[in-house]
Amino acid sequence: MQPKATVQGLPIYEPGKPLEEVKRELGLTDVIKLASNENPYGCSQKVWAAIEEEKENLFLYPEGHPSLLAERLADHLGIDSSRLIFGNGSDEIVQMICRAYLSAGDESVLADPTFSRYETGIRVEGAKPIKVPLRDGVHDLDQMLAALTDQTRVVWICNPNNPSGTIVHHHELKAFLEKIPDHVLVVVDEAYAEYVVDSNYPDSLSLLDAHPQMIILRTFSKIYGLAAFRIGYGIMHPDIVQEFHRVREPFNTNRLAQHAALAALEDQAFVERCRTKNYQAIQHVSSVFDEWGIAYYPPHGNFILLDTGHPADDAFKFLLKRGVIVRSGQALGFPTHLRVTLGTSKQNERFLEVYSEYLKSKRSIRSNA
Ligand SMILES: *Cc1c(COP(=O)(O)O)cnc(C)c1O
Image (cartoon, rainbow, N blue to C red; front, top):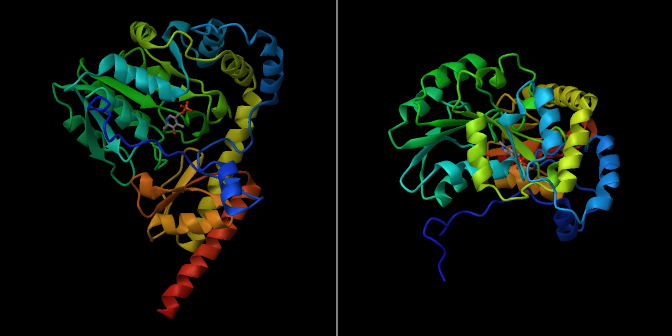
């Protein structure tokens, strides 16, 4: 039995290597994972109490649309709760966007490289991905505008971009939205928004009223540290929210995730601490890279994309054998780069230590040649 044509040959998502698997395969006990942009500080302890409390209700279906969470989140963001939809991770909202808005023959414009789930969603619906190369690691908004046609339905802007970590600035996004025709939706994926400290970063919420075609995606997986629960959300015009209610599964976010998110949201002090520590990590790691003469893209999320100058799997394997899991750029469209999640200062030191060994190994090979 063949699947439908649009699914044939689709790449299967390759996640960062799980800790458990690396320990087992390599017989290592002390392994760190800097491969999936998870929060190295875990999540707020308030979450643990919330889950403990909810364990009596596991036999009950969750709310289809978590109304209390929507109210609290809307207050936190300063928007109306009718603008919110939740998903089983923001990954699911990517899927809902494609399901609700893309048909066979439609076009969807995205950067290259960018987050891989957009292309998968587009292709499953039989629509055509139109890829616009990044310029110096940044979305090329002019070329993306130039790629729009009468067939374009959805444009994707990943901000900060995964895997390059770069951002589009507020005035650039605003000018871009002003040129978007009415038949096109613009998805701005802000999975790392809470990490960004650059004052040029878009205040995308302030653009919602003027641009009813914009969908903002955010998640509890990254700075809130709830990746295991799978809960993310979209912010958009209330009419679009209604379309997503038509296509979503009846109980698409689970009860524990809803309560975990509610508790995590209340602990903004935790979020603040993580943002500060992450920024310190960015400054430290980039200053070491500068010292060593290593090229990297300006990081704005909780990860850094650096150029190894060699096929990336080489450094990836070197690090893996020494218990440091990072992401090879070879599967991410950056064949000589590594994407490294910023960890605790101890984890970052360990990464830098092992990476310096890698650099030495390369230099000695060159000098012997
Ligand atoms: C991690 C990530 C997501 C997915 O987050 P989930 O909410 O865990 O599904 C979405 N977009 C980008 C760019 C990401 O890096």
